[in-house]
Image (cartoon, rainbow, N blue to C red; front, side, top):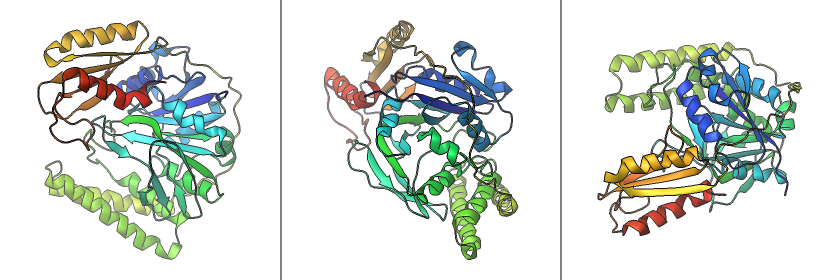
Length: 406
């Protein structure tokens, strides 16, 4: 089967280190035919030097992810447009799984998102509802599943791990800039659901998402302002819910945000005065969102940019290096050397403990899993289990094989 050319769009605002890490991960994708489009401001451009001439750059200085994504869509020359956030890193087979489903009638696809520890699920399959909430969508196994939405109920794609047929994005006007960073993809999901569109949920299409600090939140997810969340919620409810219910639904969302803030307060990450200030910013945002004019979703004119195929840096296959914690310096040096030689690398450093495992994509371009020889990796594992060293390494390699090896 001939795989369709894919355009990968990355939007970044003022986070060059995160963008560098994301691009390093994208440079190790297995998929044979893709291009990368980066929509960023002046600060983000500083991350692009290592990929000069291999990436399409769109300069954009405003803080509006919907408008930025639309600019990326206009520059896309692939048949499929995939999206990933700058604070995320894909597993090497991400595009193979995510975009392999478009031989079916699906017009959209969404994968799974792994959280900060590199193992636990942050977002799986969900259904998006017209009241700006979502609920889990039960998925059995790891094979793609195809689902059809309906008016007021959509199959949700996560903004940091989703793909669409380009012609569908163009015909539907892409993302509405009224949603400056929140609920933007959910609005598109619901508009497509009203058209009886089919969306594929692809569990093996995996990205790791770390919630890097921004102007709106700290690195540990403490909000600095809720203004745009409030504005997007109000605008979303105006478009998708019964008008008589908008006020009560805004109140319900305010209560959810209040509970989230009080959890941060209890954990010592906020002070009482911060809670009041943040709820005030939410209220002000809602007021703005109730009056913010919609951008009528019209077709996006297709750009004339040619396809710029990205040549990957790891064409020599996947290698595994492993050792005990006291050998970590040697293991990391070996991993770096293999990356320079053009390999995708998984490094395992285990201590004689029951520490839980963590997985990170190292800044030098390899996957690093660390933890105790007897500790849990899969969070369904027991807290302690006896292992011989090589048996444990074999088990962990097998656990990630379907998302890291073609």
